[in-house]
Image 1 (tube, protein in one colour):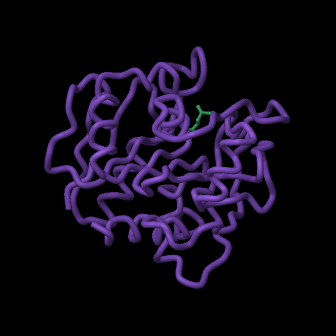
Image 2 (cartoon, rainbow, N blue to C red; image 1 turned 180 degrees about the horizontal axis):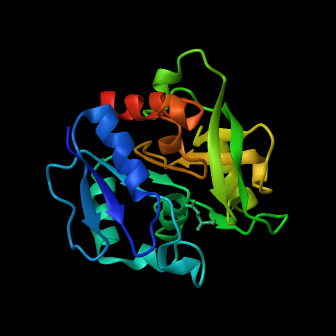
Length: 220
Ligand SMILES: NC(=O)CC[C@H](N)C(=O)O
């Protein structure tokens, strides 16, 4: 199964994502540079990784969202290609309007770096099926702009549609409705602030990220 990781200037979780994908697919992902005009056609799943693209200048993810490769990512996602945006990747997907809402500065103004407990708000998505009966999982967070905001109408819409996938048990950043991750209406684009690619090996301290990757890979 061919997968891909998009790489921006100052991405720093691209290799973590690549390691997780290689472990779970048995094949190294294509590393696609932000300036590339297209994502190769054999790619079946794309990760937009975490990091500090363009030094978080302007707003986290705002400059990366205007990269050439994002135009192609949008086209392919609209045609059904599954995409996972992790942390800075989630910020990029909201800035690119591939997902609703915005990620603002954490309410306590601090960078938060710790394991976070998440509640599965929707265990029936293409990204969460393999969690089976699990209601709560432990996944690390590491960000300063993780405070999910959406206006009241948007919030009602995404809650009503079941687009909220993960909620924090102990909200570390002030996100509305404790939202840690959401999908688009079609269900093929997931954005989340916690890092599932950092929870795929016992050495990471936990493996609760594995079912997420397995769910989406098995759906292909
Ligand atoms: N780990 C990350 O992807 C960090 C995301 C972003 N630069 C922030 O701190 O909010």
